[in-house]
Length: 173
Image (cartoon, rainbow, N blue to C red; front, top):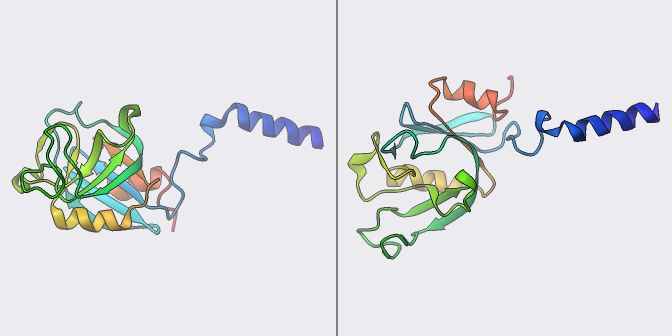
């Protein structure tokens, strides 16, 4: 019996990519879904869709990366280093908050969810790859999203509930 247990443990370790621990959200965990095709962000928490908001994404489909990522950085009044614009400046295109994630093996400082000084851009394909939100929705999201939250960026047109269920953020209630 002990031998069978050891064999099973060894198999689980050897085939761990098939075993959904660690990388996937757990039921009830905060989870963000960005659907590029709908220009929509959905925030799921405690097994429910908490809110949805319109977003802007990359000028081309390739600019906003798709996949499952992790929030690694959060900042209030983020500095825009590309143009040397201080946080809080009216011409800062990042707005009042930054929620950075680790797309394309970056550290959360290159790709993120942020505000905008161009609110008319929301709902369009206009960014260099980030996800833009209006100030009120972004600030609401910022308060509820801890570091470590998973973010799914996809072009799929499934319902957000179906996507959250598929990724384990919503259980079978």
